[in-house]
Amino acid sequence: QVQLVESGGGLVQAGGSLRLSCAASGLTFSAYAMAWFRQAPGQEREFVASITWNSGRTYYADSVKGRFTISRDNAKNTVYLQMNSLNPGDTAVYYCAAVTSRVGAPRAANEYNHWGQGTQVTVSS
Figure (cartoon, helix red, strand yellow):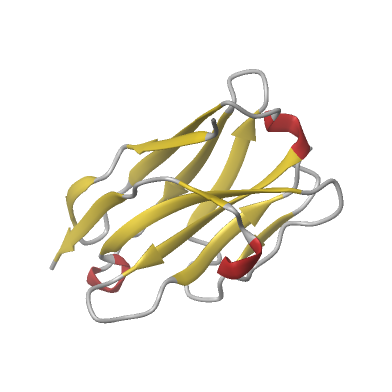
C-alpha cells in the first residue's frame, strides 16, 4: 500500500521560508517521478514543481520559479520542497504526488496516481 506523508507546513510571515517533506512508503521510490501541487480555498489544484526519478530534471510553475526548489533523496524515500521568499499568494494546502515514470515528471495532476493528505502553508502579510 502506497503512502505519501507530507510534513513541514505552517504559518510564516511574508518573505520567510519553509521546507516541506514528503515521505513515501510501499513503493519503489526510485521508479517514481514526484511532484508538488497546491490548492487554495475555492481554487483548483495547481502544479508547483516536479522531479524525475533520478533528479535529472526538475520543472516549476512560473509563479514559483526562482523561489522554490524541489529535490529528492532516493535513499530516504523522500522528496522536498524548499520554499523561499514566500508571499500570501503561496497560501494553500500543498500535496505530494507520485507516478511511475522513468522518462519525465508530468505537470498534470491527472497523470499522478498516488497522493498525500496535504499540509497547510499559510503566509501572513
